[in-house]
Amino acid sequence: MNPILNRIGTVFVPVKDIELARDWYADLLGLPAGGEILFGHLHVIPMDGTRIVLDSKIFSEERVFDVPPFHLDTQDIEQAYAYMQSKRVELTTGIEHGQWFNFKDPDGNHLMICQC
Image (cartoon, rainbow, N blue to C red; front, side, top):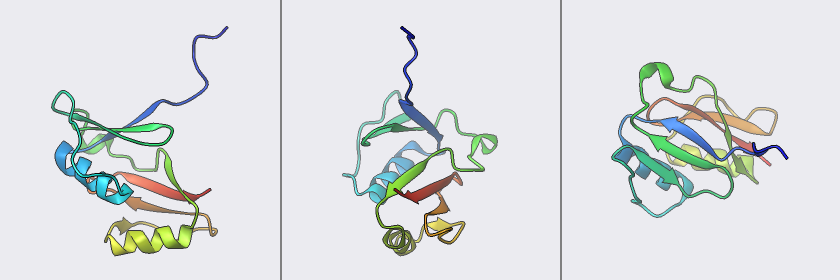
């Protein structure tokens, strides 16, 4: 039996300010504000499935994601796009192929939302 599981447990996202990032992601995902900050630099976002860990210790301009390392799911891409516009999130693409679009978090990380 292989001891390495065939799944991703966590994706780390480099952020400048852990408290600001925690609150921005909570607002974006409709989660309660606040939440525990571990070791002064980590926040685990409660997710269904693969976790996202915000980490201010690993932040540097060179580590900001130039391309999305993952995507967040939606069942309605048009509604998700309008929601992001209403939040004044920096959108870096329009809706592509009726399926996905990219945006930036406040630290400049490129992320994606994709219709499942």
